[in-house]
Length: 100
Figure 1 (cartoon, rainbow, N blue to C red):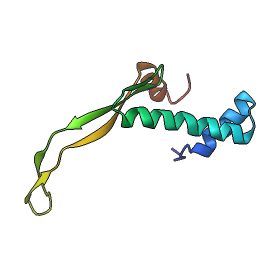
Figure 2: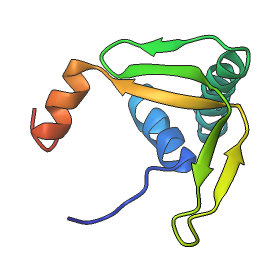
Figure 3: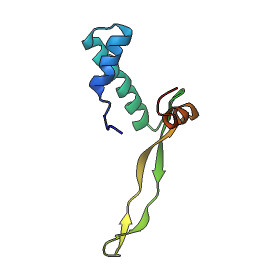
């Protein structure tokens, strides 16, 4: 399995080819969409993209963790974490290897 990473440049290039906007407009559009998504998540909103998945923020409470190397107990502070739940369509497509 080859490991390739999809980058912002790849996304803007795809918009350029598929939609026909200029390269600068395509890059600006991708940046704008990503900014809207990240702003919504930072505000605590859930972002649901149909047929793709749902991004949400989860608050984790403080707890006591353990250093696996030394066994010492370490307090873990409360924090917000980003979670992603793929849609059933996305799960099926990934399971099929993108051959759908």
